[in-house]
Every structure is written in C-alpha cells, then in structure tokens.
Amino acid sequence: MPIEPPASLTPASPGDPIRRLITDLAEVPSLPEIYLEIKREVDNPYSSIAQIGEVISRDQSLTARLLRLANSAFFGFPRRIETISEAVSVIGLKQVRDLALCTKVIEMFEGIPEELFDTKAFWKHSIGCGITARVLASYHREPNVERFFVAGLLHDIGRLVLCLGMAQHMSEALAKARTEKTFLYRAEREVIGFDHADVGSSLMEMWDLPESLSAAAAYHHRPGMALRFPLECSFVHLADLLAHAMELGSSGIDFVPPLSTDAWKRVNLKPTIFGGAMREIDRQFVDVVKIFLESGKR
Image 1 (tube, one colour):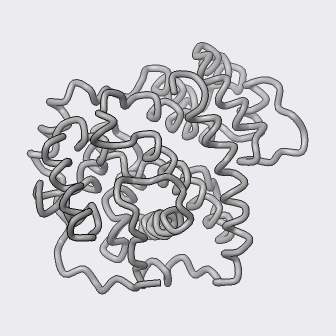
Image 2 (cartoon, rainbow, N blue to C red; image 1 turned 60 degrees about the vertical axis):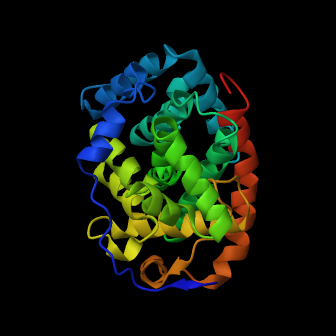
C-alpha cells in the first residue's frame, strides 16, 4: 500500500471564487425544510420522541428509507422496528437527524450529464466510504459512529458541484487524470485552481453543518494537515482508500489513494481487524445501496 509523503502545499482556502460558484449555481439548493425541522426538534431539549417522529412522518420517502435502514444489516437489530417513533427511540435522536441529512442530500443533486459523470457510481462510492468509516470507527470504540457515516458519505460532494457549475473544466480534469494516470483531485487543482475538497468544505459551511463534516471534506486527501477534528479526517481518509480498494462504486477515477502515515497512526487500528471489517462493510453495502439508490426518485 503506497504511503503519501508529507504535503508541501497548504490546502486551497475556500475563498470567494468557490463561494461564488456555489451561490451562483441554481442547481445547488439549500438544505430541505424537512431536515431543518428535524434538526430544530432534535436541538430542542423539550421535544419528545413522538414530536420528532411526527415531523419525519410528514415525508413519506424519508420515513420509508429510515424504517428500511433501521431493519437492515446497517444496524442489525434483533427485532423488527415497526414505527418511526420506535426507530427514533432505538437509533437515537442525533443519529436519526444525521441519517435524514444523508437521505435528503442524495435526493438533491440532479442534472449532471451522464456522459460527464456517473452519479449513481458516485453515490455508491460515497455510501461505501460512509459505511467503511462507520465500521472502522466502531472498532475504535468511538461514540455515535453515525457521524462517521455522514462524514464519509458527504466527503466528495464538492465534485458534484464542480460537475454542475464547471462542467467543461471538470471534463478537462477527468481527461487529464485519465491521460496522465493521476488522481482526479490533483487534476482538478491543475485545471481549476482548487479541488472538490475545497468546494465541499465551503458548501457545508454555507449549509451550517457541523465543523467536523466540513473538516473531513476539506482534508480527506491530506489528513495530516487537519488541525481540527483530525480523527474524523483520518477515518474518512482511510475509508476513502479502502472503498476504492474494494471497488465500492466510483468517485470519478478509480485509483486507490495513497495512505497518509499521520492518519494511520491516529486511527491506531490493528491490521488484523481488516478481514472482518471488510466482510461487514460488504454485507452492509448491499442493503444500504438498495435503500438509498434503488427506491424513490432514484
């Protein structure tokens, strides 16, 4: 497994060109109101599980997906979860909020030309990365492992923004990456001046999502440079690498990224866990892809 040398360049700062790209792009919507309502209820200490369940139930697609997820290999509960209130009670308030975010974000991005980018393969890779980050974090005995799933699922979202807002530049970057057999994020930087990690981080800041998600997006290719939330960045970095190695979808160019020694030291996982972890990742991946991509709008 190749080891990446320490980065010599400071990562591009999400500045005005990136923010203009996002704000001028009509196809990139604000977070949906149903998610914002769920978030307000979860953040309200006086809200009850029944109230949160009632809000979720207003969205039939979201309700169906959350119930299917609760009864899938993703959680592996020993008994069937029948109602959304029961799902909220068993899964947890913040965890349900985070899973609702994932569900709605996947529904939001439409209109990318198929000849430019395979969005279904992209979301398969993103789901695979999220599951992998969650499984590896569970071996680390991290609390609320759902936050690692969210960070993994959203880590490449800036690439969709680039495909929508800078299609010609992305076409050039994809061609450059293929011709030169280099990583797409490096080609993006050479062609555009910044990459999908910068764009994704800026988008999540504008959406007012937790800083840990923004950091994981910004530094998943160079986790050793992350000053805040280094563990989240390191797990997403490792999950991205493993998802590529396991061929779980595609984020555009199918090279396995180099491993950061800083990230490997931080996660402090024994190599012996990876056989079991990969079997669990494969088992969950089949269920979760069906739930997120093979029902509803997709």
